[in-house]
Figure 1 (spheres, rainbow, N blue to C red):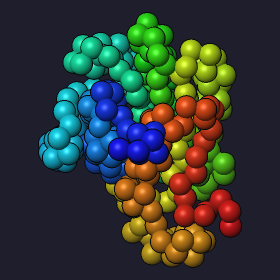
Figure 2 (tube, rainbow, N blue to C red; figure 1 turned 180 degrees about the vertical axis):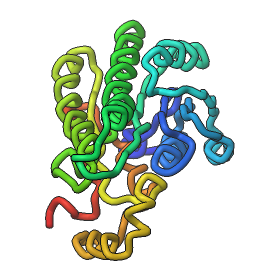
Figure 3 (cartoon, helix red, strand yellow; figure 1 turned 60 degrees about the vertical axis):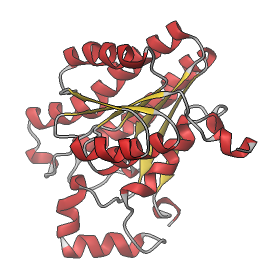
Length: 255
């Protein structure tokens, strides 16, 4: 193995990936496993497929069922994850939700459901994991999942846009505080990725066509398109990258 290869290796590391049952979370969990990490997958739904894909790489996998919209679940989750291999080295805050509808019709329940999972849980998990990193020594990596709507306003998703815009700011704020501890806090902003979360948009033929026409790459992204960015931000290759939001968008923002 040459020096360049080793920069992207995660051998001996333990990565926690939320929302790991499908889509981008599953793709990132598998990619981190291929790079050598043991993976703790967190989700409310079945992770049998993710476990099988991770273990096919030769890596270890621990499934943890947890509803992250409830802040009280964060401490037990982190304790369980840390006890498994004795440490945590990487956190991928991928779990998220969206509720679509006109701003005039958004209920308080809609707003709270989106903000609790997309923003509040991200902070609580990052805070808990950062404490682990500091206790362990040696730093660590936190990767938040932002969005194109961290940069833009979007249509009919005011709570989602608010959460993802705030997430980009939170990523910078935490990076400023924790970089002296050797903790890298960064974010990935996926473009339009074909996942369950975007299924309604994909089924809207007119809107889907409009979106595709605006993407320089000429297609929607796939979950695997995000996986490489996750490995980079989790690996030693990104040791001097702090507070950055990396767009993986087929050129959407460049248009």
